[in-house]
Length: 375
Length: 79
Image (cartoon, rainbow over all chains, first blue to last red; front, side):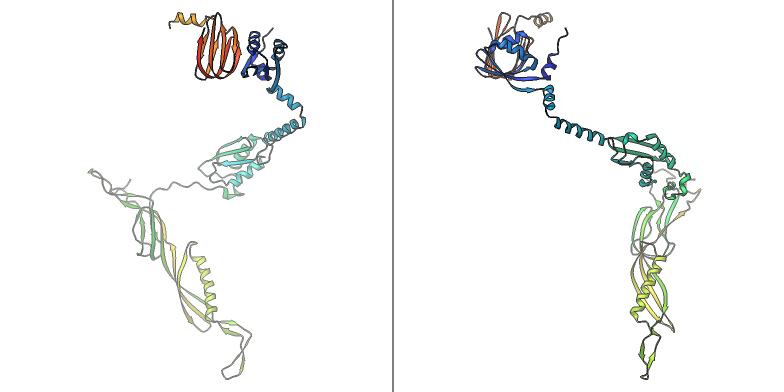
């Protein structure tokens, strides 16, 4: 007969028993000889002891104890005992099973889609494409066709060089990688904004020149050599940041270059004066009556504009002009007005002081074949 | 201890073997439990008797000729 596993039977269902009687060690000795495993045996008093035994050994121990010792069960432990207890409470078991089932079933639905690695393609477009392929929050995950979703992404966005669609628990991760070159797809006409050309690698020497005359307010040079300072007056076309930067030789070698070439970058803010002439009608229509020079009542169908009315119209004209002629970041700091009344119109000379960026990048030719040139 | 002595010691089931620390004592080759209390425990190993004296003894396990005691061990006596 195969021997039963002592450890397993002990932990499967174990009992804390209390033994009462004289000379308890004799009972322990008999149990020891019979091979009954006793654990955490403790003498409570001279006539009482407690210890854990396997539930299967209780009958044998009671036989050994005869009527000399009293054996009582204090506590029952072990999974078998727990199952028996649970069997006595079917509602609690049903509730636990139901809760576990809800958690399990819930874990099969997609809760979130995380997209990473995109650059030119908007996240919304990728998300929409996934939704069309049946990958979106709330979808039963085992029903998702991963291959089909990946193929849908690749066909919709041909500029994707790599697509990885994986899940971890309830979260779906979409990792993509876009190729640098621009690829025109069949659907490019539908949504041209999706396709953004990759930036060209910029080479050569570039300087920044003033595209308006004005007073430099601030110059923030990122690359290149600043040629002007705040407060300087610059003419249109004057070089503001040079792409040719002088350098000093650090060794005594001959033919050491004295300058190097960069693509100048920076922000130049200047106060630019503008002079414009605006004109508007001198009179406005009116159906009112007014007193004449000789005291007679004159019916007048037009009256002269007041200065406030003229200024209000002028402000509107300036706003329109600024919208058409000034960049978005430009700011009108000051203005002076000169009203000139003519027969039917008012001509207003306006001098505006505008704070705006004035630099434009222009390629600068590198002297070829000369000293310090690359070619 | 030489190897032959060590082998002889390992296979000698008549003599008591005791491993004791301040809080634990392991007795092997036990044939009978002679006396048991909260402060002392006497066991028989072949023809020898071994007594462990201490406080708050709890027998963690009895079985297969081995007895493990937890508690404060004061001394071990061989008779």
